[in-house]
Image (cartoon, rainbow over the protein chains, first blue to last red):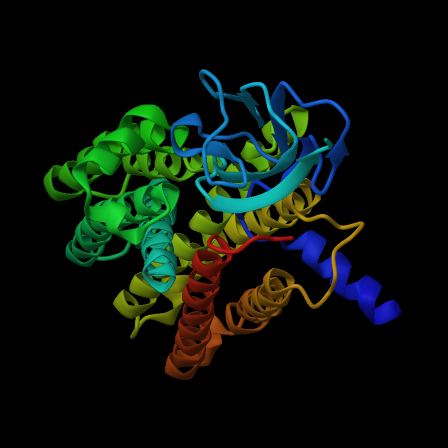
Length: 116
Length: 290
């Protein structure tokens, strides 16, 4: 245990300069794996870092592979918000890619279901 | 490509550190009327460093543009490069930095005595300008400002140490047969080194607090493992610096050629460790700390 504390202490004392990291998905609405009684009007993704809008984005697709976003996806600060068309019952997949202002790119995806 | 990106980062940092520390230390020596590094040697060193900084900066920019686009092919795609330069924080900063880097090249080639405060300030600004695109700055909020400031301080302190060490190596070479002449330059470097190590430690603490998820971090995280290697090497480097300060330097007036040789060996090893540490920093920049 003491060794661990010592190692962490040393790390704190001598950390590397300009250590870049990645924008991870911190919160999503609808959430991953959620089953909703009413169709959502938008997908909102919150990330751990600020984003570069021109290199970040999201696609929401239905079971047949069609895109269901409506209008412009808004990307600002550390969030991506995609307005949606009126969704029918079924399973939808959210596929996102995010580039943080420290230039690192992350990608991911999850699904949610709208109940019949 | 990740290895190339890490190498470009390391070369870029080391080149700017060489000019920052080398010119600052030389300026201090001149001010104290002490032996300086040979003008020709320092000019060649700085011209090479400035050219490497410009080229590695270009490679760094192109590779990052490709990384942001999601495909390394984007690194050579003019439309991706244009978008990265015009619409991202990284691109805006690098566009300004390229102007500074070109200016640095010209200054190193054209200045009569390419080892003064102007060069140190420009190289320092070019290093500091990397802070706003660090991870700490990306997090937003007050912690971003603290993190960026600690990044900048860490880069400047490391640059003064490593670049100063290179200039010291040139001074040692110049004074090979006259150990007593080294006393002044060693005293100046010792003061510089002490201040720099204090700032390195303080900025390291602030940096870590703003970057590392200390509460949840697993000690087997690859980033952390590599960071520990860096810390171990930095401690060895600090140990060698202490040896120089308290053992080899005091022996200089009476130690003759043997004392100079021992000092030169120690400084050489210290420099090699410094280069290795900067290489590690190049890799750390491509990894996630959590």
